[in-house]
Length: 315
Ligand SMILES: NC(=O)c1ccc[n+]([C@@H]2O[C@H](COP(=O)([O-])OP(=O)(O)OC[C@H]3O[C@@H](n4cnc5c(N)ncnc54)[C@H](O)[C@@H]3O)[C@@H](O)[C@H]2O)c1
Image 1 (cartoon, rainbow, N blue to C red):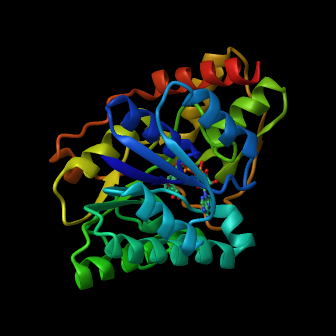
Image 2 (image 1 turned 30 degrees about the vertical axis):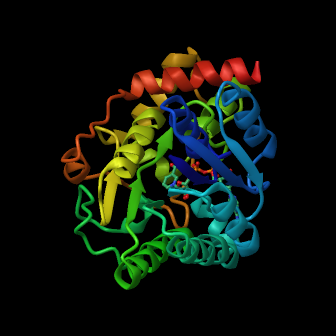
């Protein structure tokens, strides 16, 4: 199948493109290679990580409707995996308008084109951040998510709302995936594992928010890929699904695993909670388990894989 992967040069997108290509699908990437983080990493994902894969790349903005219409038309797209977005909670506080424009308007334009071009399935990235400051854990798809606490979270919740509208009005199959803190090789430089590894190796202090009193449901990239493809292949009409790893990890034990792997003790700078961040995330994954998905990677293995990649890529 011809699968449009928006944000295909990104962390999650590049891994999905790899898997799609390996299993014989024809991925089509649209990515604008923006400089939210080093665009060279995005280029290297495409040129090095995906060097053995077959795919087509368009460099452009998902908000460019003319370009996107041409891509849908020329490539005869069957299904869409929409991952292109401005990610990152803290950055969204600095530039909320940008997050609305790319994440909400950009998605709306793609939904319109997906109806026009009779797309069979529109799978899109939402986020665990939609659960905001919810106290009840684990976070379930049935919980109320009307209290986002960052512009990024609000943009992801808005994406879910507009996707629902297109399903209701036009019967477009839309499947929203609430990813929980994804990590792994070729990961994002603005995320904890990347920043901690980099700073520990450079003997710089790592910034530990909420004085370390945080937990995260880390999800290994290969598990995110398999969950996304299960959702793509299943004959779903409308769904919101959590994709989260198998256990809630304390930030302090996460740091210990990195230290053990690197065999270096981290210098920690303990800081208060950052605006927009939530103290704990843990996913209720019963719904996606019913589709046959199970997180398979233990965090010790996942962190080891990341560090091996980091050391070989950065030398
Ligand atoms: N990584 C996580 O832990 C996580 C968790 C929850 C949700 N998500 C969501 O998953 C998706 C992928 O995240 P990621 O971690 O791979 O991030 P990423 O930043 O590595 O990937 C996003 C890609 O989209 C591209 N992009 C951004 N704006 C664009 C635009 N206007 N037009 C075309 N391309 C554009 C970027 O250049 C980038 O390559 C995002 O929607 C993100 O919000 C990620």
